[in-house]
Length: 114
Image (cartoon, rainbow, N blue to C red; front, side, top):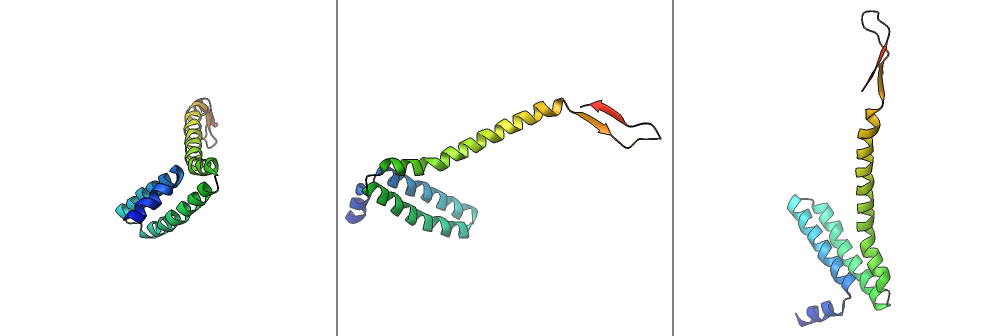
């Protein structure tokens, strides 16, 4: 137990945060029954932690932080774009006209505002 505690103390903060996040993800996979994803995330846990450990050992803490925060940044950017897109759909559809090319009872086609 002392060797695990000593190894944990030698890790830099990004190399400590990543396994905590991945462990939570693995527990969520077990909860929903996605055992294939659980295996992939377990492999990612060990490979990613080793990567972060290597980056910190070579004094590249900033690169480790960037790699750790980059997926969160991209997720938030995509979420913002989705919200922006959905908000503009309501605005642009308000000004479009609907035209019905097929007439009913021989009447000419009509266009009406939405």
